[in-house]
Image (cartoon, rainbow, N blue to C red; front, side, top):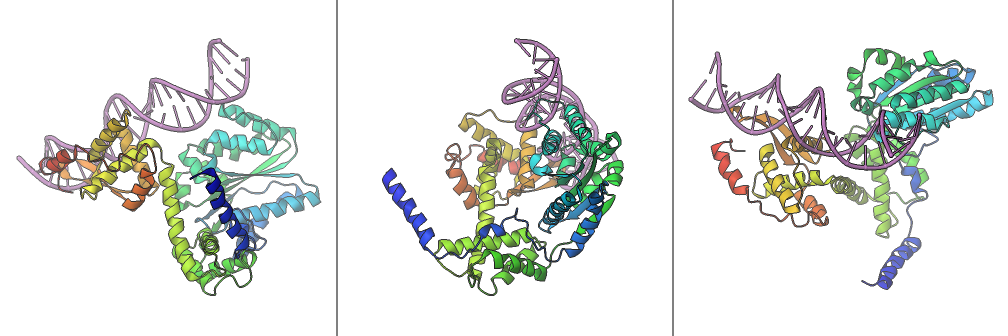
Length: 425
DNA sequence: TGTCCACTGGAACGTACGGCTT
DNA sequence: AAGCCGTACGTTCCAGTGGACA
């Protein structure tokens, strides 16, 4: 296709978009980062969190708070809403309040979290190169040079434990002892209820001076949330009666996740818009549900590191010969063959075993450790995603295109060995 | 009841890399 | 430029495991 026709196609798309009916008034209202003016069914949590942070207005340090609740239960929205208001009010009272919001899962490491905290105070810290202790010292020094009330919001704080960040938490909960003019408080947010079990008891006691629990929304509550947002997001009459109910019901079935509900509504609107329709129906919601699922999986597959893709491809190939749940040894044999074909040096079996585990965690594989008696202990692995989807994504990847149709030589060994040294799968 | 298999999974360590401090 | 640091990704080693089997 020439560049001229490419432009024509694109111009047609843009023209259709601009001329066609728009179901949206403001689609950004349905995005995750939007903090609404009104948070239905969270009045109690807002009041509770507000009471905890209120001492800041009088220049005192507020208690550390620990907030639990599953994904999409409004934790982050409530925290941002309350703290934004607090900063505004504090200004009127002459108190200097600084807030630093950090998502520990996205930021990832102790070092980067500290450098983010420093950045919030205006202290420059290099992207890498310093010892964590040094960054911590700079953070303390900057706080000591000023007289401010600092609130560090550590969202998805459970990720910090897995990244050995409990040392950082310990330091942060003790920092006020080393400060003379400024004061800090910590707001920890977690959607892992078992998080406390892994925490150092000293950290736990000071981190959870106060606790707030966010229970999941039920379908009726989700309906209210969606109605409010839909009113802002959609044109009048663009949403068929019943669409909101369906979104709410679908999201309520998935542990009352409001984010999921908002996603469904937004994508359904987009589906309708692309079809040039001016009414969002239940059919669009169903399509949105399928599309979200499809897109998430495709995205996950595309972004895998090369060796994880090869491991996944090996499980896919084993499925071809009706071996629905493969054992690690077989996966490794095929994986080695694929490496050979691709001109790569294979990783060790230990490493491949970890990759299989990682693929299980992100939901692309389904594994189960089983003991086959005197035939050893291993892990049975099967695909968690549609084979067609794997094929679709891998054939569009230059390095894997030839591999999805490969017929591994070791299939014969695997099937013959099954009777000899391994139990039937 | 002890043996043995085919691993699992923890821990320690190695290597490469980017980037800061001295 | 050398030395140091954190991070990412990997290897090596090895104790532990659960249940079939002799």
